[in-house]
Image 1: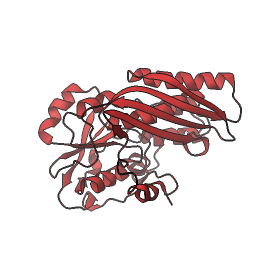
Image 2: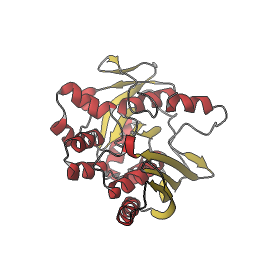
Image 3: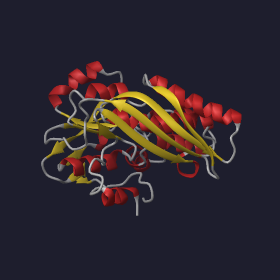
Image 4: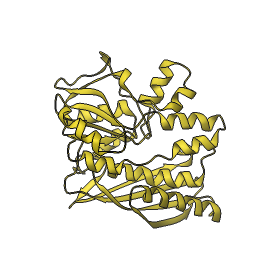
Length: 293
């Protein structure tokens, strides 16, 4: 059973689940678990691991259109090395500072595999869910795609300094807060653009038309991709970029672009038909899923 199947199994007992974070009386709560074998390639520094682990949870807060308040993390490793532990905490503190949140601690444990569990808390009185997309809305993304995929390729090539730099993303909290005023549906791209579009379509009971040529692809992808098909795989299906994927009335786009400090790209549009296509062809529901392909 993969993660998505498990979530559907639990949906009847957990009706509040299904978005990037839970909302309780204006409080946004989310948690993530990352493992060395699946999430931190060889060469990932503990500083980058702390940044990335906590950043993943802060990205979920951003996807709800909420301000980020604070974060905690569990650090577990085979041994508690002083330098590695301090580096991890510094990375966690720095990513929090980047979005005006505070890192307030967590828990320590020993474990045969380095593992980080992070929880972030935010606030909003008007969360943006995945279920509000409407036919005619523009489908947009923040930033650029393929950053993490390129980093993994660079880790494999022992270009660890550049790879670590690419692995440290800035959660789009400020953009998410502004987008909450206009976006009709939103989530982050941790599972990849293609899978995110399928998840938005399922939640909103709509379809999408995607334009492959419109995708904003990170320059690093051009350096590591072997051909055009590989470039598309890295930018659309790999995931773990933690950009925002959202729908918005086209009339709102210019105002939003003027107010946020990150590029916003229109990559498609919402349709009434429940088909999901890219350049007229079915878009595969393919991306990152825990416990599956």
